[in-house]
Length: 281
Image (tube, rainbow, N blue to C red):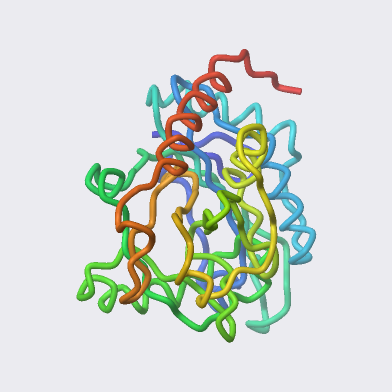
């Protein structure tokens, strides 16, 4: 398997990060992740834009330029021969002499299979557990997923899929997904503050607004008492219905008509996107 390391395509065994990288010592770093279908990356320019924007936010200079990286990604997935898969791009804080100061970042990108949620999650919807928590620098896709991993035993015990973060009742996001509701009037609403602006979120709002009222606004846990539907989006989740939050059943406790419609529309949207000829520009 070939991976990208620095500015080169190398054998995966050649990718190695030293003990004194800030990503290991302090958890300082960022990443991005996208999937591809039939060797065609899905929304690659959006993911590269977010990668380099996040790097600027964390004061990290990526050692490879955007155009060269895009070309190497195409080469990597072609040479590896995995028709459908995913690419994970990681930018670290770099090697440090004092275990604190930012240095020259290390960059690598891996090629891996896509792991989607089980079919029954799409058929029946998922349960979430609310958690009072705010991610550090929430508009950046950092490598810090401590809370989600730390709470995984509780999620498993409760039969829950993920955590729903909130701050004093104001909902922000999940550990790896964006959150939405469909209110009593049929308007799709999604949080706008203290979130990672998901790429899937961007495209869903784009096409959903052609068929439904859409609003980016504050949503509270109290609002969940009256909503008709709720769902999440993400690169591997796509569109996934929420049937329950804590002990509160959402709507009728199963995927609603708006969510089911968006699930179908998103599949068609992605197919149309990957059917287009990709450009290296």
